[in-house]
Amino acid sequence: MFEDFKCLSCDKANYKLIEKAKNEKIETVWDRAEAMQPQCGFGEMGLCCTNCSMGPCRIVKVSEDGPKKGICGADEDTIAARNLARSIAAGSSAHSDHGRDIAHALYNAAKNPESGYKVKNPEKLISLAKEWGISTENLDIKDIAAKVAETALQEFGKPFGHLRFVDRAPEDRIDIWKKMNVVPRAIDRDIVEVLHSTHIGCDADYRNIMVAATRAALSDGWGGSMIGTELSDILFGVPEPHEIEANLGVFKEDEVNLVIHGHEPTLSEAILVAVNDPELVELAKKQGAEGIDLVGMCCTGNEIAMRHGIPMAGNFFQQELAIITGAVDAMVVDVQCIMPALSQAAKCYHTKLITTSPKAKIPGAIHMQFNEEEAIESAKKIVREAVSNFKNRRGNILIPQEKSKGFVGYSNEAIINALDGVANSVAHPMGTVKPLADAIKSGVLRGAAAIVGCNNHKVLHDKGHEELAKELIKNDVLVVTTGCGAYACIKEGLMSKEATKFCGKGLATVCELVKIPPVLHMGSCVDISRILLLLSELAKFMNVDIKDLPAAGAAPEWMSEKALSIGTYVVASGVYTMLGVAPQVTGSENLTRFLTDDIKDIYGGCFDIEANPQKAAEKIIDHIEKKRKSLNI
Ligand code: XCC
Ligand code: SF4
Image (cartoon, rainbow, N blue to C red):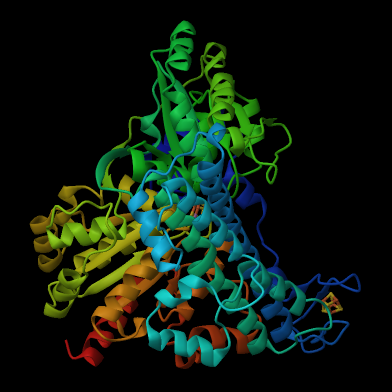
């Protein structure tokens, strides 16, 4: 009966709910994607410009006599590059603003006891203070936290110099960035510069537009995102491996189901404290529930799964389906990747959709502003609203049976410790990557690949991630993953110990020996900064640059502007990066060639585009083997 839905998703949990949605006449992302066909060809190729009100202008390529220039004279290269650059800047701004909020939370932890935030990992705080040259003598943890938070906040707008985390990159890499004039200086400035230079009548040289865009992207990866990750670890703890459950089957019929969806752990951590408040648990019982079941969705779900073992309910394309179960008493959201469609779905059930950020309100939702200065109190109010909704459930509930188990929590500290086999506390800064380097050099592991990113209707839901991961681990390539890709992998069982059955002999041996799954969950999308650091440490240890490592990145189902920023900083960091969906640049042959080819000679990394996961895997493996050859290993 679910035959029809196999072409929409390869996650069986979804079929029953898509069917339920159909029966109850509720539209989903797949319905809207179908209604949108055919999609605009100008937009798809990046050839529509709305940068000024003389436009919109579009370049017509299909006929000889169509316009080849915008009214101001901008050609296809300029228009496509400006559009791409603006998207990259938006993506960088989202990650970086997230990082800024975490820095404010750290400042609150130091200065404002009402906030309820506390430094969970003083060792990591002190080590970062030292790295940044902040004197810690005679200072208590709170004072150090305040100084580190202030210093982090200054990274956004400092007038001189470059971003502090740039110094973590291998020297050769920094030299390339210097030569190309893309060393990120101050996060806000680098983003603003893209907006300025792509204003009408400014930069018209596509290669130069990409210089500014690359700098803004690097200020995400080696700036905003890295600040987000590092300061989150300091505040909320460094993730450690533990087993959790994933998929829509994690909802409980007899408990209050509260979904936390979005991105920033400042909110989800406070909600986690609130759901454990005895008074609120008591309130849930008074409503007839057995307790409060907190589950996560999208990246904020990754954050609390990694740190606290909270179940991962579903990824980007499952957000509406979660509500369609009829079992969600509240979906609490903050920023990014929250479909406005949720409020329509929530209306068909008793579900309360609660927005919490002044940056993201949704018509039809209840807005309860989350106040970081009184984080825990604020969170309790939100949880109370969720709990008191349990009694309003209607009869139409369907919780799928499907859920799987897997191990999450692989911070760099955890990966290094696992491979080292040392029972070192992860509280300590990174040990040595020697065992990882040895495994790669010996060929037991051929290399490593990161599979990251979103869901996109242009790819069968979850298939891009799963199939690519399976093919790579079969060929002894260790896979690390973040974001919505991580959900696809855990749902498919690739983070369980049994997943060694999918592995080649070398990888299986390593996994069994050091007790890790072949696909390692490294966190949310801002945590791709962890991957940058791991590559960096590995390159330094092996005395090479990142571009020389047998490593690759892939975003098989990417869709967001953040993903474009990530892709750009990863490529500019020297990594070969496979996209499953083509970016909206193909109308410009020059820009397309630049991104997939010319850029290789500049940064060592480049984009490649391949929608078929098998073929993508072949290309990645081929790349890894080439790198091994040049390293003589
Ligand atoms: Fe969003 Fe971060 Fe993409 Fe998922 S992977 S759809 S960006 S939640 Ni980041
Ligand atoms: Fe048209 Fe140029 Fe204005 Fe873009 S900036 S809308 S191409 S006139």
